Image (cartoon, rainbow, N blue to C red; front, side):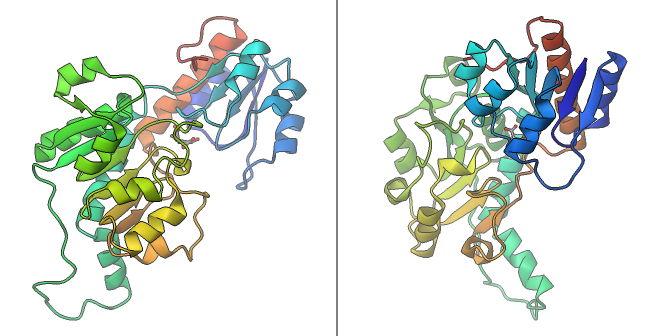
Amino acid sequence: MKVFISGRIAQSGLTLLKENNIEVIQWKESRQITASELIEACKNVDGLVSVGPNKINADFLNACKHLKVIALHSVGFDNVDVAEAKKLNIPIGNTHGVLSGATADTAFLLMLAVSRKAFYLHKKIIKGQWQNYEPTPELGIELNGKTLGVFGLGNIGLEMAKKCIGAYQMNVIYHNRNQNQEAEKEIGAKYVSFEELLANSDVISVHTSLTEETRNKFDNTAFEQMKPKAIFINTARGGIHNEVDLIAALEQKIIWGAGLDVTNPEPMSADNPLLNMESVAVLPHIGSATEETRSAMANLVAKNIIAGLNREALPSEVAN
Ligand code: 8YV
């Protein structure tokens, strides 16, 4: 059996595939593979490990119909036409569960960095602007006892909420498509409407999938309903916020700050005005990028491939 991997994954996953006598063909260039190159590479293989934002759309799936399984090296599956894959009987695996802690760490890191303007102040030192001691330089804001609003209380949102409760005794409210009663019981989170989430949160952290329903959800209208001291954090997908509206909201001080691990588009260009703002922190989509988590992701990807090639249920399959 042959599997194509469209990028780099941790060695543990490669080893597992090889131990199962699966031949691996890997995309090794630093640039992202193009749509036509991906089709070409997948025409004669049995499985695909999709690393990065490859479009697994109807065109791709119909050109590579004989694929027995596609394993995403991500929990997000917004690039995949899941209904078409189902029609063609190609199971789609993802890395659900194994990256929640690392991604929540990234959200927490951004929240704290924004609240103390850390990235901006770091840049000032690099520019030689730390000249003397100032008792009131660019002041931050504290998080203790504040309200965290989670948009999308699933595994990652729950981990973020737990960190905020543990570190700062934050009060947690959330908005979801469906109420998460288990999480309500576990951490005492309170379900609120989207409007209430906007109006009452000191920090809003986005942990939902990108769908037609959530695309551009945080736009001008949403930012205007937030508190003037609110911090907006997004570690989910850049498409969930409108970047032009976010820049305007920060410039006009409609909200206080923003921490982004995901942008729209990605990569963000170096001249983006967000990068020069005081209460903004941006990271290059590294939510799950730790040695431990990337190794767990590679293992799960390999297990999904092995199960799919054996026509068994995948350990982590994207539900249709
Ligand atoms: C990975 C992610 O970015 O899981 C996701 O949905 O966005 C990340 O963990 C990434 O896709 C690495 O391939």
